Every structure is written in structure tokens, then in C-alpha cells.
Amino acid sequence: MNILDHKLKITPLNIYIDPMVPVDKAIITHAHADHARPGNKNILATKETIELMRLRYGENCAQNFHQLKYGEKICINGIYISLYPAGHILGSAQVLIERKGEKILVTGDYKTTFDATNKNFELIQCHTLVTEATFGLPVFQHPDPNQEIRKLISSVKNNLGCCHLVGTYVLGKAQRVIKLLRDNGYDETILIHGSLEKMCNYYQKNKVNLGKLKKVSDVKDKSFNNKIILSPPSSLKDRWSRKFRQKILCQASGWMTIKQRVKQSLIELPLVISDHGDWNELTNTIMETGAENIWVTHGQEDGLVHWSKTKGLNAQPLSIQGRDEEIN
Image (cartoon, rainbow, N blue to C red; front, side, top):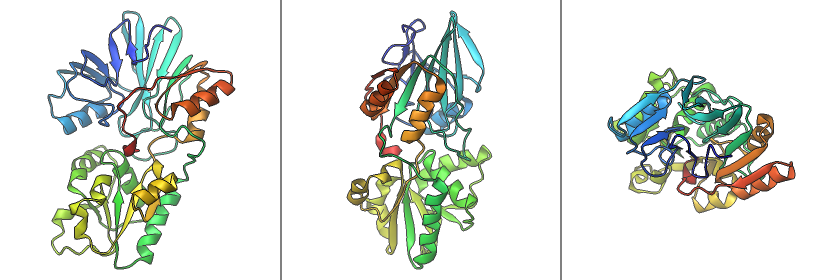
């Protein structure tokens, strides 16, 4: 296969997918910082990814932006490029590359479980699949996120006088946790760290109803009893969190499956909620795409490569550096 190289560069077109350093031409799968970086000259992405990049990095984070709708194809020198929903966060996309009947699919970060905050994953048939592997080990079996969120609601009811401080990544995870709370009957005002405000407002403008939110800094009486408060995971351990005297520390992440991580992070209520597919989602997707060639990147590459080989597939790791596992 010579259309795409191991740096995720479409070689005949000199276009990179999620480049680690600024390039002339880039396709961006989604707006998380480990995939979308400022400084590229030309960017192709979904409307939402472009708007989120501008919101995070400023209007001039790239010289030129080119929007592509899901399912819309563009042809450059005989190579077709199209984007399809990845189900990861708002605007996230898989990249399909086609030439003379050959189909290569780059998933970017994805999950196949239902998520009310973005367009859900669309299965695409291909010959070569470049898949992420953040949770590419059998130990990662994510429970129903509604079950996890009900644990949080139950804890609030059973621990009157305490607030629940929930660590969530600013873009995608925070909005999903809020929407899960709303969909499971939690109607109280949810307090948020100031860094979440822009992203939450953007989701609300894109018809994701998050209900009533208030910044912690806008709470005049400084009474946080019985409240659910969302913040970046890093804020659980810094000076900001000291204002909450009676608190239960929570974190929403796929990594909460690992008990040692929970213990090291001093998390009292782990919530296994991830925006990445677990082992079953990854392996099912590999088989359902019909791909014969599997390239594995962004995580636990060796486990997924070994599994793919046991199924008679041609599999290899890419080991691309610079992806952040802590946001998952």
C-alpha cells in the first residue's frame, strides 16, 4: 500500500492526517489537542471541528480552512477523500481514502456506543483499516454509561452535605457526562469550572441540551453542598479544589477500569465512561469493516495487533508518538 505511509501521510498528495507538527496540508479528525494543533497552512475537517479549533486556538490557528460534510467526497488527482462520523466527540470524523477501487479508512479516535452529544459511529467497509487502540486490551470492558451515571446520582442522594467533584476532560467528556445526567433525570443546576464554559456553550448552540449550568465562580453564597461540580481532572488536585470542604472526588474515564489508577489518583467514586471504544468495540469493528490489512496506533498497539494476526489478518503497529491518554 503506497497511498498512505506510516506517518499517516497521503503520499501522492502530500496531505497529513492529524500531523504532530505544522504542515502545508492537513486533515484533522477532531478538535482534541493531541490531534488538532495550530499552525497548519491548510486544514480539511468537518464544520464543527473547524469551529472548535478556532474557539480553542483563535481565528487564525490555520491560514485556510476547508469544510467537508459527512459523506461528501472530494477528488484530488484521482484520489477521493471523504469523512464519516466517528462517534468520539462533536465533529469527529473517520477519513476514507479511495483510489482505483482501493479503500483505506483511518478511524481517528472513535467509539461505537450511543452518545447523544454527537453523530454516532458509522461503519465503513474498507481494504485497509488504520485503527486507534487506546483501550486495546481485553481488560477494558466498558459498562453501560447510564449505569455509571446512576451511581453518581445515587451517591449524591446518599451523601447529603457533600459535593461531588467530577474530573472530566473539557471537550467532549464534560458535555457527555452532563447530558447523561440530564437523560437520567438529574435536573438540578450543575456547577462547572470556568474552563468548561466555552465548550459547553458551543454544544448548547449545536442543539445539545445540557440544562442549567453555572460557573463555580458565580456561586455567590459559596454553598456547594449536594452539588455536582465538573472540572478538568488536573483541578481535582490543585488549589482550586480546596474551596470545597466536604467533597467526594470522582473521575469519568475509561482508565477508571484500572484499580491501581483509581487508588493513585485518590478517586473515591470512579466512573468508567469513555469516549473511546473498549476491547469489544475495537475487535468487532475490525471484523465488521472486512479489512484485510490492519494498522494499529494511538494506544495498546501490541495487544490488538496480536489479536488481529490470530484472525488471519495482516496487522502491524504504527507507534505514533504524542497522543495523550489522560483525556480518555
